[in-house]
Amino acid sequence: MASTLRTAQREETRRTLLRESRRLFAAKGYGAVGLSEIVSAAGVTKGALYHNFSSKAEVFRAVLEQVQHEVGERVATAAEAAADPWHQLLTGCDTFLTACTDPDIQRIMLIDGPAVLGWHEWRAMDEASSARHLGEALASLVELGLLAPQPVEPLTHLLSGAMNEAALWLAATGDAAALPETIASLHRLLDGIRRKP
Image (cartoon, rainbow, N blue to C red; front, side, top):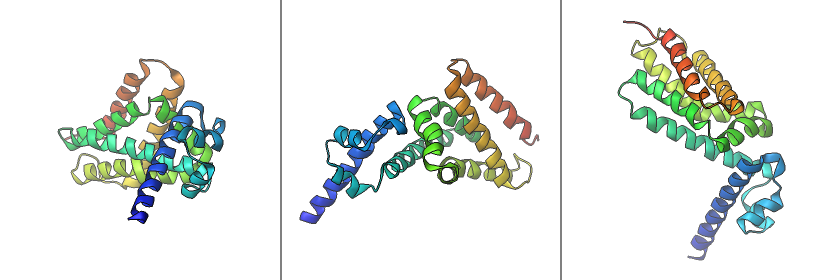
């Protein structure tokens, strides 16, 4: 019973640390947030933080995983609601770009993510979340004959890179018309690779 209570308390402490860290990283950026600020906001000691995470970078990695998972779930849920496989791809891409216009997601996932963890680790995390869903959707479209037979991995990297770059551009532009224009451009690009009946 006591160990169950300790486990529950530890999980609650971890959730609180992640919630407050995410709020702080989103508002100020990774570099401007110190461990003392995180523990103060969470109402815990540094010992409690170190019991759950070995460093501020590890806290950030856990926050980034959480954000990527949420974006991936949002994309998958929206895509699954679309009428057919082609519209599932379009809807998933649209949802990803729309989600990335959220300043908190931009800061954590697109700006600080690669800078804090390094390109290779960030890319591996991206491949395990968003890029994996995209690759599965493209493989399905090739199988259905909606895309020409081709290796899916290069296409996945091309489209994923293009959408990440577009999301960064959207973050910088601040123009309200930029999102619908970007989505329209993406649809034209995807229509160009769609196999015509």
